[in-house]
Length: 226
Image 1 (cartoon, one colour):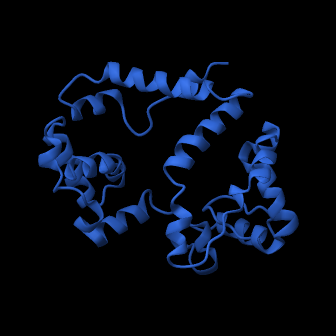
Image 2 (image 1 turned 180 degrees about the vertical axis):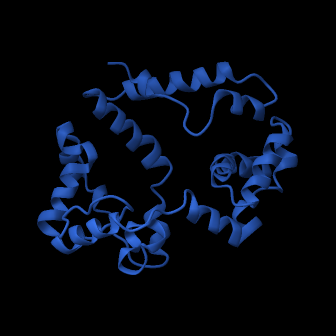
């Protein structure tokens, strides 16, 4: 099985990316896909292990590994997943134990029962649903969404992109830096009109536009600091 089936654009179409750039981007996109495929294939193991290792080495290691340091500014943090022996054990597990985080869920069910009964995702079952939770869930199904308040609030269907939209509307321009300041610097390679459109849509609380604009933040900061 080739990893090419798993390499695709997320959140953008080729046409949208092209509208941003002043130069043709098709060759560049294909080059990125080729490099990602080479990176995946450079690791040993089955394909799911190669993809997992690629994610660990690129995204986890280079992009979000700083998070526990940030947490430590406010409260003590621990990083058990950085233990080498524990890491080797996890990477040796068969895929069935990793799909849908099955083995992690089992750990919570067996050793952290009080945590496993908490419903953390709206609409999803807790890892260890209790009898009272099952009763509440059944009652909530017969209630209209507007009446799912109080003890039934966890079963209400939140409006799509609600929290991001609220945050954008509350914080306004502060949440969009380095825009619009970076637009002048970006005009060397980017078209201003689509950037302006994403910026204005984000200001109005459009979470989809904000997701696209935030993808440009690292590039914008680089050009702003040149």
